[in-house]
Each structure stands twice: as structure tokens, then as C-alpha cells.
Image (cartoon, rainbow, N blue to C red; front, side, top):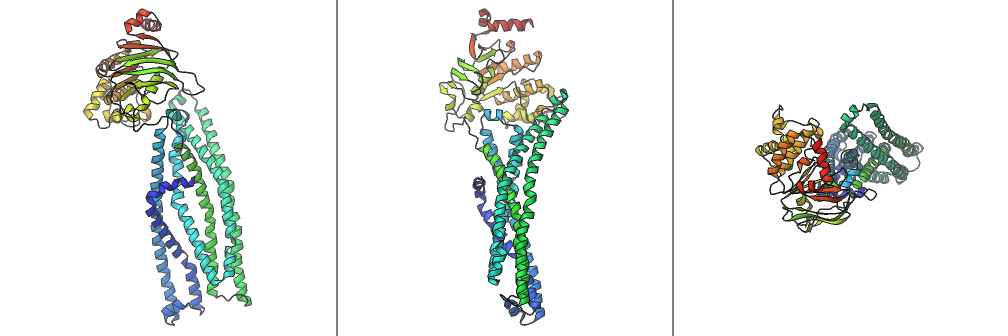
Length: 586
């Protein structure tokens, strides 16, 4: 899974290479203090290194000053290169996080509507925010730590071997055990971190649902019930975290056992050599060098736990992120498809069979009818007759199981999907408005619209008078999902948005169901002007909305039951006439 992030690193390969170079130089300077201590011990004990003796010209005081000055030089360069590599890796980490987040979001937008019907919003939010956030430490720290540990081992091995091959073997004997233990730890903890990411996503989903539905919770007085559900979800996260703690807490203590063994061996063995005058000849300065360098070598190896810990977190996060990215898409945009502009002749449904899933009921069964261009077609029927499903098929949110839908003889799949949807204005009964201002929501259909065009659309939707009563008028914030607006106001805003889009096909799916009769009359009069020379599909329970339609289709159990004008259908004395009579009496 980790190898899948490398394509995201490619655009920053030059910066990454420089970061590695700066990190290597920094580590080399960081490893100098043991050498400095060894030099100083040898100088004061009368075993001055030859390169220092050459610069000091036999002066002990000068030799000491040379070692002292080297401390400032080495630490100065070490700090400078640390600043360089940290800055490089941190910037790269932020860039890659941004690129993965944008890439994942673009892939998310391409998913079928079916995917969103089964996915949890909170879980998706967790993937795009928290899971991707888990990658920061991996990019900014893990690469650098692995690089520095590698340099540390190479540098220490060279110094140890040049001084004493036997002591080099003693110093390195613990490393295989530390590495193998770290790999085992990473495998075990990876499973736990995947559980943590999953349960965190479920908790986010629960919180997102509850916060979004707070009015329903309060109206049903179910605060205690929902609190219990949040406690259950949060407890799952807690238990997953506790399961990982068992490994995380035990890693360092176990690794330090091996470190202590190697550290003791490297100090005790050469000390015995010096005391007993046996074995290899080493100086006091070399003994000090070994003692400090082995500590510099072995203790940082405990950071392998953090390295593998961060790697395990990244793998768990990437597994979830790429499961989202890799989710197959059935309805794909035909980039080479026909660019749709308007309906020239008709929209045709031909023997269309549709159901939302294999186990579900058949919604439309062998449905066939025509919608003439530049005419108003009304669609009515009982709840569940398949009226709204028609709009979802026309927008290609779904494809039919069999049969086909065509515009001017061309199947919907032959059109460029973006151009098709750009030329359809939908006002749904389930109105969604975004957190922002009224102006921003109306202009969502046409971001380049002028203030005059926005106000004109609002007037036609009977929204303008309400807006003028607000303190900030069109710049008024309407809250998340338009919580500050009534149902009728949200519906009028949606109509204004569709009017501004001015598409050649307009679909009104119960567009005025939440407004009063007087407001509906004003809207309908403006809509009559709007839909002139447009192909209009009006879905309604309130038959007065469609009585002037050029053709009315009555659906029953996913099939065309009746069809004709208002007066023709009344004469048939069928379902339409019965519905009209009931509403007239009401």
C-alpha cells in the first residue's frame, strides 16, 4: 500500500533529493560530538591526534582551543542543515497531503449516486481529513528518520571497524534483534491502527448524523438515547486504541534490553583490555569515543518503534483512502461523446426497466413514452409510482436495467455527461442549499451572474420580498443546509437557482409543494414565461400545477396508465379524474 504514494512524491523529487542531502549532512555533523570528546581526552592525556598536532605545532593549549572551536563550527553547521532538511520535508508533506486529498475528492465526485446512498458522510469526511492527516508524520518524519538511522549505522560501523573490528562486532550484535523486533511490532500494530481508523470513521458518522439532525433529536426528546449511541461509538474507538497500547507500551522496554547488552559489552570489554593490558591497544580517547558513539548508535534505534508506528498508521489510513479511490464507477463520463445543447425533437423512454438494486422492487417496468421538445409535460401518480426515478434516469444518476432513454434519437450514454447535466435545470422536492449567503446559493448555477440577474431570478421565484426584510439582504448567511430558512423559502431559493441557470430542459419535481397557494400562483405565472421554448417536465401531486400542460402522463406501478391533456383525462374518468375530484373537494 505504501508504494502507491510514490507517484504523488514524483513532482517533488528534486526537493525530496535536496532534503535527503541536507539530512545526511546534518547527521554527519550530529555524530561528531563523540569524536570531539575522544579528541579532547587524547589531547589532555598526551595522545594528541596527528591532524590536531600538526595544526597546534606542539602547543597543548592551542590543541585544546582547536578542539573547542571545532565544537562551535560543527554544531553551527549541524543546526543549519537541520533547519534546511526539516523545512524541505515538512513542505513536501503538506504538498503531498494536499495532492492526495484533492485527488481523492475528485475521485469521490466521480462515484455513482448508488455509492453515496450506501456510504456514510461522516466516514467519508474522516477519510478526507483525519486519514489523510495521518500521512503528515509519515512524509515529514519517517523518510528522514530511516535515512538518518541508515547513515548512523554506516558511520558508526566505519568508525568502530577502523578502531577495533572486535568491538565493532559487539556494538552491532544487537541491531538484527532490534530490526526484527521492529518489523514484528509494525505488523501487529498495523492491524490495530486499521481498527482505530474504522471505528473513528464510524464515530464521525454518528456525530455528523446527530449534529445534522439536532432538531429531530430535540423534537422527539431523544437526547439520552443519542448520547448512549455516541458513547457506544466512542467506546469502540477507545477499545481499539487500548488494544494498540499493549504493543506500543511494550516496544521500547523490550528493545532497550538488547541495547543495554550491547552498550555494556562495548564499555566493559575495552575497559578490561586497558586494565589488564591485553587484547587490542586502544587509548582512553578511543574508549570514550566508543562509549559515546555506541550510545549514539543504539539509543536512537528505539526510534524505529516510532518509525514503524507512524508507518503502520499511514498504511491503515492509506488502505481506507485507496479503498475509496478504487471504488469502481459504473456511470462514466463519455469524454468523446456528443455535446448536448437542446432538445430538437423529443426525449424518448423506450421499454425502460429500472430498479435501484438487485434485491429491490422493480420501479419502472417496460415504460415507454415521448416528451416533445419545447412542450410542457406533466407527470402525476401515486407515491412510489416512479415519478422521481424518471428525473434521476434523465440526469444519468442511474442507468436503466434494460431499455434505453434517448434525446433526438441518441442514447443518453452517447452524450458527454457534463454537457448533458449542464443543460438540465432541476428543482427537486428535496432542496439542498449550501452554507453561505443567499446570493452565493442562487448564483451556484451561474457563478458569473451579475447582481441584477440574481435579483431578477429571485423576484421570479417570489423570494425577493423576503430577502429585502433581512438585515444583510442577499449577503445574509442561511446556515448549514439552510437551517435559517423555512421549507418554502428554501424551495423558492432552489427555483431561483434553476431560473438563473436557464437550461433548455427544466425539471420541476414537486417544486412548489412547500409554498402556499398564493405564492405558488405567482411562481407559476413566472414559470410559464420561463419555460416558453423549453422542454419542461413538471412532476406534481397538486394537479393545479400541471392542468395547463401540453401533455399529462399518469404513472401507476411504474407504467403509463393514462395520457392526454387535462380535459382529455377528465373525460376518461380514470385515476387522474379521481385525483382531480378529490383535490377539488379539498
